[in-house]
Length: 69
View 1 (cartoon, helix red, strand yellow):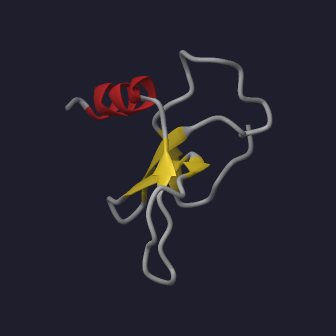
View 2 (spheres, one colour):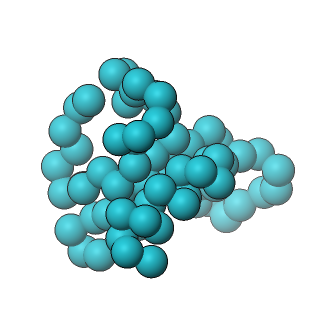
View 3 (cartoon, rainbow, N blue to C red):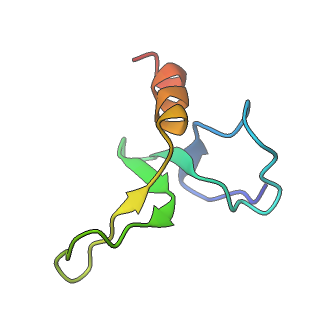
Protein backbone atom coordinates (compact mmCIF):
# COMPACT_ATOMS: atom_id res chain seq x y z
CA UNK A 1 0.00 0.00 0.00
CA UNK A 2 1.33 3.40 -1.00
CA UNK A 3 1.16 6.19 1.59
CA UNK A 4 -0.86 9.16 0.35
CA UNK A 5 0.23 12.32 2.20
CA UNK A 6 -2.66 14.21 3.74
CA UNK A 7 -5.05 11.26 3.53
CA UNK A 8 -6.15 8.63 6.03
CA UNK A 9 -7.39 5.43 4.42
CA UNK A 10 -10.76 4.36 5.84
CA UNK A 11 -11.34 1.21 3.79
CA UNK A 12 -9.52 -1.79 2.40
CA UNK A 13 -8.60 -3.46 5.68
CA UNK A 14 -11.18 -6.23 5.56
CA UNK A 15 -11.63 -6.69 1.84
CA UNK A 16 -9.56 -8.05 -1.02
CA UNK A 17 -5.80 -7.60 -1.07
CA UNK A 18 -5.01 -4.26 -2.73
CA UNK A 19 -1.23 -4.31 -2.89
CA UNK A 20 -1.19 -2.04 -5.94
CA UNK A 21 -3.74 0.43 -4.48
CA UNK A 22 -6.02 -0.44 -7.39
CA UNK A 23 -9.12 -1.25 -5.34
CA UNK A 24 -11.97 1.15 -4.58
CA UNK A 25 -11.23 3.04 -1.37
CA UNK A 26 -12.41 5.95 0.72
CA UNK A 27 -10.03 8.36 2.44
CA UNK A 28 -10.43 11.19 4.96
CA UNK A 29 -8.46 14.32 4.04
CA UNK A 30 -6.61 16.52 6.52
CA UNK A 31 -9.24 19.20 5.90
CA UNK A 32 -12.07 16.82 6.90
CA UNK A 33 -13.26 16.06 3.37
CA UNK A 34 -13.86 12.62 1.91
CA UNK A 35 -11.84 11.43 -1.10
CA UNK A 36 -13.20 8.47 -3.08
CA UNK A 37 -11.10 6.21 -5.32
CA UNK A 38 -13.07 4.10 -7.78
CA UNK A 39 -13.80 3.28 -11.39
CA UNK A 40 -14.52 6.35 -13.51
CA UNK A 41 -18.27 6.60 -14.09
CA UNK A 42 -19.33 7.87 -17.52
CA UNK A 43 -23.11 7.69 -17.08
CA UNK A 44 -23.56 11.46 -17.44
CA UNK A 45 -21.60 14.56 -18.42
CA UNK A 46 -19.98 16.58 -15.64
CA UNK A 47 -18.62 20.12 -15.69
CA UNK A 48 -14.93 20.56 -16.53
CA UNK A 49 -12.68 19.71 -13.62
CA UNK A 50 -15.12 17.24 -12.01
CA UNK A 51 -15.18 13.45 -12.05
CA UNK A 52 -17.61 10.84 -10.80
CA UNK A 53 -16.49 7.44 -9.60
CA UNK A 54 -18.39 4.30 -8.76
CA UNK A 55 -17.61 2.13 -5.74
CA UNK A 56 -19.35 -0.93 -4.30
CA UNK A 57 -21.83 -0.31 -1.47
CA UNK A 58 -19.70 -2.51 0.78
CA UNK A 59 -16.79 -0.05 0.51
CA UNK A 60 -19.04 2.85 1.49
CA UNK A 61 -20.41 0.88 4.45
CA UNK A 62 -16.86 0.13 5.58
CA UNK A 63 -16.01 3.85 5.43
CA UNK A 64 -19.13 4.72 7.46
CA UNK A 65 -18.15 2.14 10.08
CA UNK A 66 -14.60 3.55 10.24
CA UNK A 67 -16.03 7.03 10.85
CA UNK A 68 -18.53 5.75 13.43
CA UNK A 69 -21.54 6.79 11.33
